Amino acid sequence: MSPTPDRPTILGLDPSAGASPWAWALLDDARALVGAGGVAGRGEAVALALHLRPALVAVDAPLSFPLGMDCLEPSCGCRPAVPAPGRACEREVVRRGLGLFFTTPRSIIKPMVYQGVLLRRSLEAHGVPVIEVYPAAMRRLLLGRRPPRKGAREGQRRLREALAPLVPHLERLPEALGHHGLDALLAALVGWMAGHGLAEALGWPEEGLLFLPQGDALSRLTAEYTEGRGGGSSAGERLLCTQGVRGSNPLRSTTGGVG
Image (tube, rainbow, N blue to C red):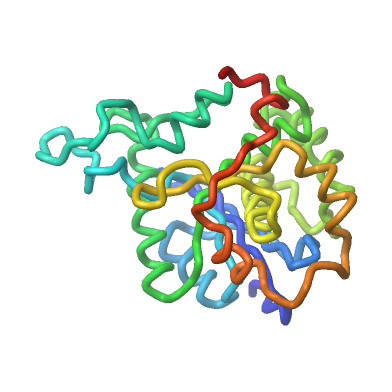
């Protein structure tokens, strides 16, 4: 049985496009890891979120189609409103020197996009706040511009070492979850940052926003957001006040992005 914490939480999800389980990780408002595990697909992920009732769900997958499109089928008459690949948030990520798969009809992650869109609609229908996050940016902040492969044992070991000072009770993350569990944890951590003013929203609100950590998030985290501080509002409530606001992102210089 999954935990039922009595304080605001952030649920991170790492979806799978195929038959593999989805990984999840739950952080409380002090960033402590409450629990982690796997679920068998979107239906169980929604059931988990409804059981836990987190302040926010942070998902490591596209949650929307490009503006002007309601699917990714080449046979459909819908067309993107802008003659450019993917969504505005994805183009900005690439402009900053980070790689990802664009949300297009020919994308290798097309099945995952459909899963993400359906997940978002289901959660929103039940009143559960949900955002799209980009954990790869967090991994780069922790491990440098050329982090080791996340699927390799060395990459997972180094990431756990880097996360240990930031996430109390990291030992609750089962090693059997591999890099999927770490991705879910990173998603939850970026979601926590979004609720505490340490993340930036890229893109257009009418199309879909993508949250990634600010470049100085780690130093600010240490200096300003220690356990026991942070007002009475939940991460979800704080996010509602900041979502859609786009400012400068120091990650651009940190990650070596262009422009």
